Length: 373
Ligand SMILES: [Mg+2]
Image (cartoon, rainbow, N blue to C red):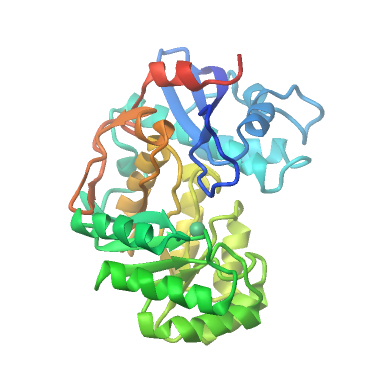
């Protein structure tokens, strides 16, 4: 089988509000076509038009090449070799960041092709599912309006979610506000697992103050309390964390960064996003690092049903994963872009069983929201 074409398609809802911390108001999907008629689909959580430029760019020199040019004529089943080829060919504009985010979209599409070609779900190709279902946590924002926040959270708990994440929004302004937000969040969800996502606003000193103040509300984890590359800060925060797990990693794109967070920062939970951190191919390498460090890996995922399905396949194979992020954002790109057999009932998702990723693109939605014409 040979790759015949790689297309990157940016999508965007007309009412996009960039001031909101909601990354599924736009998207970039990548479709990889083959000479056997099998097509794979992936997506990147990144700036859509920048990813498209990385896919379409003409060759500059051997360390600065567009992804499509490197892939056409290649065997799409050679996922590991092609990942390294793409990484090497983008070294001059990459070594992480958006180049690896673009590679992530292509890699997800290649695994989709591999699964369809072999008639197997991706989790089987990754080494085998350890579970048929997995709990998911409802992921929402902290709100200025505490009544609205409480009502929203209680709706999820009533739907059966046993874990709720609150993040960003007004969190980070001052200690009193932050404690009030966490107290209200805990009161709203009762004994469900409370995940607090700071969104990286603090210095180590401020993060340590929050850690002390949040103890009585017993969060399951505190996420992104520091800048991602503050490795000595992570080590000191983790040493002081007592019962609260320290989680981070959604911004990172390279396995080496996760290695440092684990081996120098000693964080409890790493959160690679498959649509940023290089897709399944590098995701497996990162999972091996987590296992070697006896740390937990919980995939970050805030994008369309493509990433939701990909994260379910990946999580199905992980040895130690309590739940997976499940975006409850209302964007039509979240709800309607693909048809998938991922169904959530009582806060538990079914792992997809169709060949490949098990997603079908909704071409009407693609046509309605594509912005590359
Ligand atoms: Mg986060």
